[in-house]
Image (cartoon, rainbow, N blue to C red):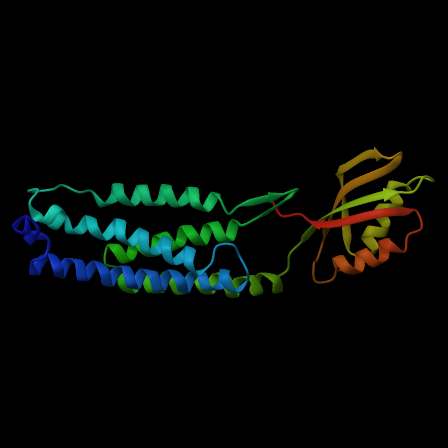
Length: 244
């Protein structure tokens, strides 16, 4: 029995295990580096999730390169295709990423987290095949893109879409043209084709989208809420961002 275990503990096998272990440790650290930004911002997937994804991707990739040591090297020549392993890793991580995407009404959140989890698996694959500088660079770029690009994106010209839900009192809503003019005076354009009208407890409720032509100059959502709250004919309202 002990003789059967010798191939698993000889010098060459231990060296291969040590090399794989160092790869796993590096993958765990790089994955945690990528996940820190998500953890800092209170996301569900944080440092542990990213570290595990990156480390698992590395493990599944690096062991293919040591096929000669499989089963203690007693199984004879083994043919392994790393590309098929990588394909399985990418597919499996895709299911994990889909689990963090959440649709709430017209808004979708979690896309950045899902994409970064997928990127963390790619970092692990790069480590597994031995591209250490590229893996380190990709981990740093992922972290910078999630932490810095959001600030850059907010400074660049762009448009913001909001969904307004207005419930009017029994005397009825104003004309839609008047509503559109009021929105334009605050820097928003009403999407006329988005208007939906319903009645709840005999009160008319309008749902429609407004688009900020320039988000830097348009009234902020809290300022809009203060303006709408002063309207006499409005019984209740809600404002929600639309991300699609």
